[in-house]
Length: 520
Image (cartoon, rainbow, N blue to C red; front, side, top):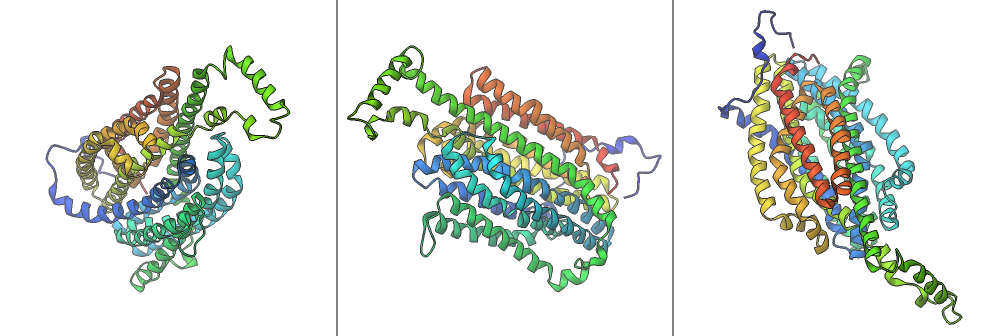
């Protein structure tokens, strides 16, 4: 895109939404966004279905199993999500070349993107598989959660290759405006995952009963089938002839560097976000540990002045000739308290899953917006890029306001979509209500973030996510929940502060309009 003329007034860089909606833009926005929303929501359902079906198991498995998933999925995104950021550079550059009318150059972007994603995805899949027990051990000491979570996460890590490579295909097709391609692949993935989840978790027909591990195998198989669908679509003559991406001659160090330059900040932003989420989960896990300690203290037997007498009585019981080797010598009350299910962690995972329907759909809407912004910049129409961005924000904020009102009124009903455990639902209700109230702001923050990605302003997003997670979300969660004693409510008030600040900062940045000058 050419730089603005020197005599152009600086005020044209301003990109506020204005009061008057541009309804003439809505058909293209909706036509571009709906397939992306549908695709990403159905892909998200792969993870939600894991939580849903695991929640149908007996509570001794379902509660630690859902807690294990709460730790596993952020770990998966730290690795796979970081590398999947190749999609940001791929989509931005593809859309610019497409907007310029250079189809061959647009196809060359995918050639080089695949070289990056396939190589890094393969290495990361193997490395993360073997590092998984160590990573999981840093997050929780709960033996039940570790027993469920490590095998699940290891199996899912084997799908990092398919996850990252699929994102190269998706971002290319999104960049050229063919957002429906990934939608079809996602539909196939999700339907297959739904069937395999049911069969492998519960042991239906010829399939073994694998419980939590069954959910992981279902997701792994589904992601590779989805990649196969994307590859099959890419070899259709209409696309292969037009873009010519399967040619080694199109491998180019400069293009690889440009994709990497734009994608690395986004990848680091993903790492910061997921690391923040994991630390958030760890703080929630401390609440579960504190609940065990509080119960021990309340008995007056296992702590304080009663502990010495209890130890003498228990020792005498165990050493009694009539009780040696007998299970009756075990204090089963003590065992039950120590093995209290991680209710707060499980409730947090369920809240995340329900909220992800807003988060992912906003991300999808933002992804479509990023394409429209980047294509407009490629066509030399920066003001049109601004209009697309703000109209997308206007549309999706309205939709999320409606959804948020429903969640505020019926938080238990929203949680009941994922979990059948009454304790988990009642525990998570206040956090779910807070997230419902934040859905409109979540929409503003995420759509503006993706629009900035489309414009190539990836470093700014990286810095904001790093600062907000490690100077706001994580320390504030600990301060409010533990230091000030607000408990589970405190961590969600900290999440509220993070979302409010994200919406304000990203909205302000997009309003400023400096992103119009970025060259890609």
